[in-house]
Image 1 (cartoon, one colour):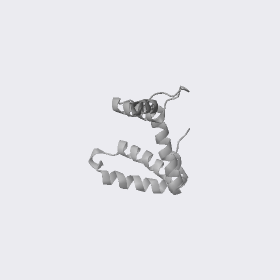
Image 2 (image 1 turned 60 degrees about the vertical axis):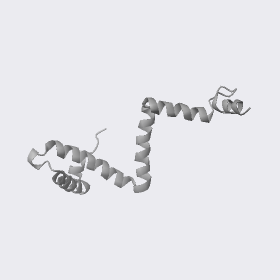
Image 3 (image 1 turned 90 degrees about the horizontal axis):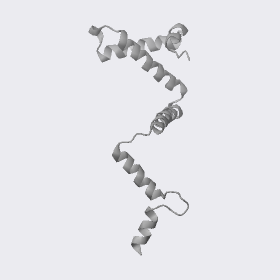
Image 4 (image 1 turned 120 degrees about the vertical axis):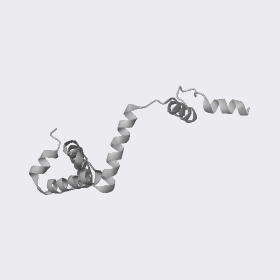
Length: 113
């Protein structure tokens, strides 16, 4: 009788839907096999941005995104002699400060799309 109950919990109910326990087992199996759900990963990234937006506000999110863009461009254009992380960070901060107050600098690093 106990085995029959366990089988009924794990197997598919009569409605054709998978039970929550069986769904959990399928998800665990997918993780073990190394499957990647592309849609879920994209949604997870968007959810992180939205969570940041709620917790720190739009201006901070915009500042962080602009800082990432500036840092990429600084790293790509700085000489190898000055490629130390602290120098790149300082140059990035100076350009970011200028971009906050000068629309000409801001226009360089904003998205065109």
